[in-house]
Amino acid sequence: MAAANAQTSLARQAELAGDFPAAEKAYEQELQTRPSAETWQRLGLTRHLQSKFSAAIPAFREAIRLNPALWTSRLFLGMCLYRLNNFQEAQVELQRAQREVPANDQGRDEIDYWLGATLIALKQPLAGLAAIEGLLSRRGSRLDALELAVKTYADLGSSLWNRVAERSFESAAGYEVHGHALEADGNVEGALEAYRHSRELNPSRIGPGTAMGRLLLAQGRAGEARVALDGELKLAPTDPAACYYAGLAAIQLGETARAAPLLAAADHWTTHDPEPAIALAQVYFALGKREEAAAAARRAQTLAPASAAARELLQVIQQAK
Image (cartoon, rainbow, N blue to C red; front, side, top):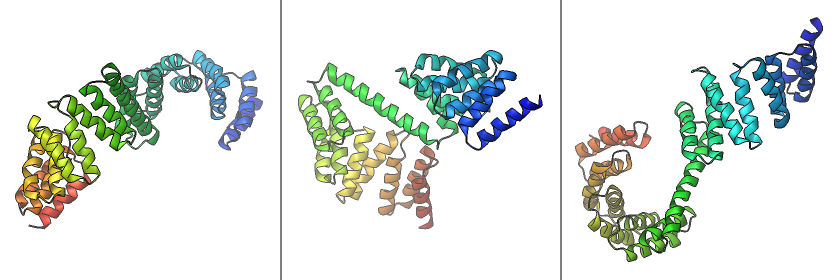
């Protein structure tokens, strides 16, 4: 017993010192005389930390065989299987770990991340994003989860756009989709041309005019943007996006009074975006309408309680009274 305890002590010391090869050897020797689920798990961990995923898998499986409730071994087994592209097996183990992990244990974060990554790898992006968003709801600043979510949403969006374009490219819808794809690639002029062609093929189609106006505004071409957006507003007078960008164009052109009703319409029909309300508050404030400006700023805060811009704008308006 004393020899076994000494071997365990040596293994832990090596592990703490970051000498994983020595820890691995010590755990292997310990298992020859005193096998246990915990030691098999520690052996698996030392191999995992050395990226020896194939060797770690049987250690974690043995730990689970000896103690089926050892959800941590299921988590690391799933991670190793993922690393070896065995995604279906990884999904099974990670879902079992998800069912067994205590509700408030921090290990749930790792399970959600790796399960989400596995489902995405299995071409189930919506299910994978649900797991990743569950993690982000608890740990919003976790960088690897944020990066995975952003990439997956971008890939999913491009895939959906491309499907529409492939089915009906020589159509107004197809050219609009092509415009979004070009825009995503940073080809602004190509995107503008695609949106223009979409509008030419179907002058009554809602959407291309707003897309053109948004891009032209970003380039500082407010006059051209206003023309495109005015055409869009004839088709959809209450469209929130068209009203919002038309209001911004009016501001850039120095037409503050014209901007106010456009931004008010955008704010009225917007249910989640605080930007129209923020812009409206700024316009009202510039026109000397401080009560209206404060009301718009408060609405922006209601839509986005964490918005520093809305909070600071409201403070400026209140202090100016």
